[in-house]
Image (tube, rainbow, N blue to C red; front, side):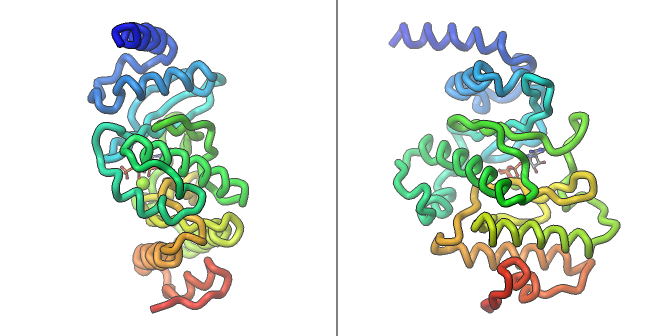
Length: 257
Ligand SMILES: Nc1ncnc2c1ncn2[C@@H]1O[C@H](COP(=O)(O)OP(=O)(O)OP(=O)(O)O)[C@@H](O)[C@H]1O
Ligand SMILES: [Mg+2]
């Protein structure tokens, strides 16, 4: 046991040398608990991450950091808290999804599954040519993806973005959401103006941890909610109904009221 701790400390010492910037944070220790540090250390040694520098966003369940890869490429590093935060609400999106049905239900396991789920969803969406961040790597509670933005400035959320042509923006979002549904066979399940970034004038869908396959028993209910969110946001700018949006995304299925 003592030896384990000594080994851990030695590894952590190496880690501190490995990832530039990590030391400078005054982030609460619950973000960088020892197991998270070890995970970052592992990812650094694999060559995925060189620099961790600055918080993009802190949240209840996860913090997103700015990072750089080996070749200076800009990264977003999403780190889920393992010691605090809600994880029970994740189960609703995990248990009905046949890809993840058989996982253990401890807090740590659920969170690790959550992170893996976001990784595979991002990959799957990208394969279907949906505009999502490119997933680079994941391990335990850490997900590394390409940074959406430029020169360390993250792209704004749709919520904060001043649209010049709302109709074209909605059109592009429907195209992306349609691909997600019809090609990737996924429902985002938290689609809103908060989880769409606008990069070079075009939408990028983010935050796919809760996205489920279409076979999930609540997939259609989640899709109805996503559609309602989009319509609520765009109603002020464009004349559009839930029926139309639902039909566009699903390729002609009828909206259930
Ligand atoms: N690839 C990325 N590039 C740039 N910024 C990103 C990227 N991914 C996430 N972000 C930023 O981090 C924020 C939170 O990310 P995300 O929505 O994935 O996490 P979350 O789980 O919703 O966090 P919370 O629970 O706090 O809402 C986003 O709103 C965005 O500003
Ligand atoms: Mg989000």
